[in-house]
Amino acid sequence: MPGPGQAAEERLQRILARAGYGSRRSVEDLIRAGRVQVRGRTAVLGDRADPAVDRIAVDGVPVAAHPELRLYKLNKPAGVTTTLRDPHAARSLASLLPPGPRVFPVGRLDRESEGLLLLTNDGDVAFRVQHPRFGVEKEYLVEVDGTISREALRRLVAGVSLEDGPARALRVDGIERRPDRSSLRLVMGEGRKREVRRMLDAVGFPVHRLVRVRIGPVRLGTLKPGEVRPLTSTETSALYRSVDLDSASPRSRRNSGDLSQEADLQ
Image 1 (cartoon, rainbow, N blue to C red):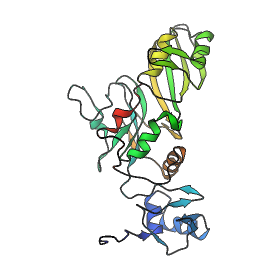
Image 2: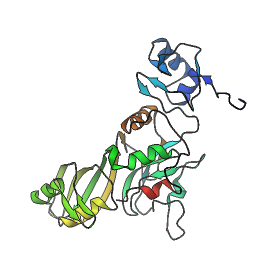
Image 3: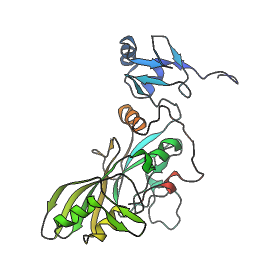
Image 4: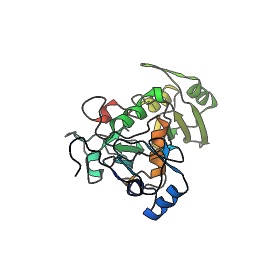
């Protein structure tokens, strides 16, 4: 155990293997190839680092290597409330959380919505993913009642007036029309409360089903409803890079309380 003031240094191979960059042998190959940097210099075999403090990168991409960091993705089923402590919820996220250190949802989906939720104990990355200033895209697959019109699609991109101000989709595509129902893909740049549902209500096509399939560089993929798994090293690095963070800060908070309370609710 390091004493007061001592760095909690570990061998670089162990840090990168734990962060998901392959076996110790694979990580040694990365280091030999000159692809790993520690504190701005090219690493060599035998180097040590403090993963809670030192900037570590592979091919110039920061590695979120803090040993206490937890980052998961979850496919939230319909009927689950995005909360950890609501005694009135018929079913909450608490039953779906992975074992180990406590994590919180990054953003929210309303009870009947489905799809991708991120779970973490890093308040800094959670704050930035949610804040419109960082422009993290959220992508949704939506089914609406009726045959959606071209004018409605145009308005979704041009902007719709809501009670809390104008709202617009960055992109709308993947349109499929049937006589009684239509499906489309919306990409949003912010996450106001029930924004997608309210926009489609405003253009006359109420939402029948809503599934979030992407948050920034992280995709829902093949996760089954209720399934949760850790982000890969590639997903983690891409997520931190997308919000201009080069290190992880587990248990950091912008505000006290659940991280999910600062978030979108679609």
